[in-house]
Length: 133
Image 1: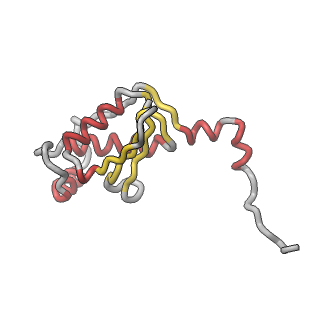
Image 2: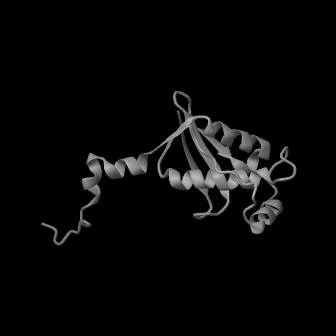
Image 3: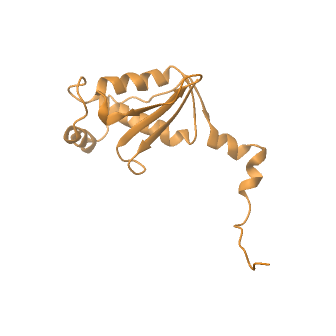
């Protein structure tokens, strides 16, 4: 099982880091802009072969799929990302060759927490202090 999270600029902006941890090992931080495109593609492909766990996987998996498809279109995958090339690829929009990534299995802790016995904790009104004794 792999635990992971992505950090991006804004909701749909550029991917910055991928934080991940294979069960007993220490957590790793993968800075997408400091690694080759080929290395990042390999990392994302490894995630697809694992059981994944995270908080708000909808967003994180969207980011991985989006950027996997962008990275596949980069011409020289043995070098670091070129911001100008990424901007050109993104402005071109989706391509018929784009793929949809799918992990072996997935657990979204946010969705699980919303349906379990602790959901009642989120249904309260905001606490306000009316007077100090």
